[in-house]
Length: 157
Image (cartoon, rainbow, N blue to C red):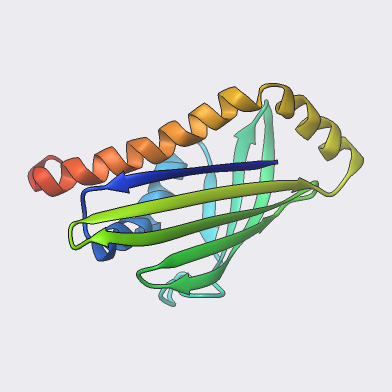
């Protein structure tokens, strides 16, 4: 199953990439939502090959995910590959500088089942894919809006 969206942001590509590269901020946000996040080697700066172990609640159960950064091409793209017991996932984020102060972000998430129970669960999710797609797009939109507001009023965030 694949989710994808594009959003234009009133910010230079370097600023958008810097916001996307705020891994500590994303880790703190995940912790606030009840997830457990640990980076395999927190002393080394995040780069290609960085690995995170995640545990998070989903549909009433704690799930595990091993996430590895497979591409880090500043300020153009990042790619992550994730594996859990039943699924593999790939998250691609690409930036395109439309002008000096405007950037288009393209985000694509693909989830593939590896086991029969995972295939059945993903099939049930397909029935409501439109609502999951709207939520995915809303999250990317919220990121874009928050980044634009942070640029306009730096003291608020």
